[in-house]
Image (cartoon, rainbow, N blue to C red):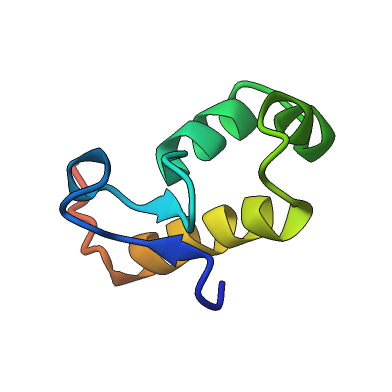
Length: 73
């Protein structure tokens, strides 16, 4: 992930974004969840590169790993 993901309260209300852009991590993740390939995301956002897409996934994995999940029975 390196320093590709930033959180700045003055940009996108402090939501995690790809550094140097206003493209939120949730936008990239939503596209992936919707079936977009990395190549298609890069066509939609030419200012990104493949490492940015990977960083968004890595960031999501890191956040989920820190979450406590309460199972419902």
